[in-house]
Amino acid sequence: MSNLTDAILYVPDFASLVHHMAQHYPECLERDENGDIAMPPVITGFARTPAVVNGNSLLVYARLRDHQVSQWRGTPGVEVLAEHEYVGKGTGDLVYHLLFDSPEATAKYDSVYSREPYEVDDGEGGAMYVTPPDRFGVMA
Image (cartoon, rainbow, N blue to C red; front, side, top):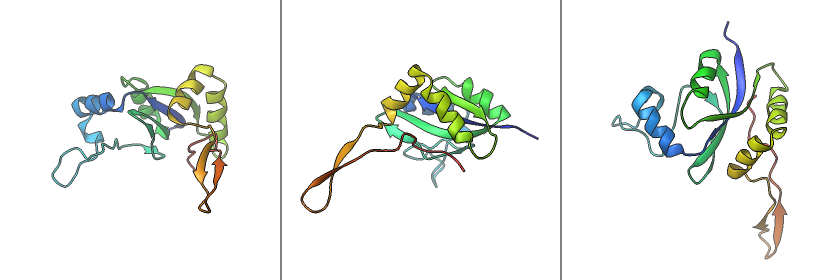
């Protein structure tokens, strides 16, 4: 039986990653009805949350099989910010604990997913502040 690993993947330049995937793993890019790469590009073949995007950078929380862990670790333009063997409920807590224990990983995470409070219209002529959760996603 294959082990599973939960990981937060950071991609600082998504366009470069899509180019690499098109050259080396074209089967991992979603296609449209004409067989062309879907726009916006979507990388398939592994379980993940929807991507959090900021400009051309993105983050995903992924659940990877053994062979996928080494594949993503070795993919140019992809960095594993934090990872932990999947142990069932609570794995996400372990992954995020490892992430936030690393100032370098946290800085990269924060460059894509802002945890800072922001102002929104309250619908009644005023404003209120919303504080995003520390985590953009965890898989069940």
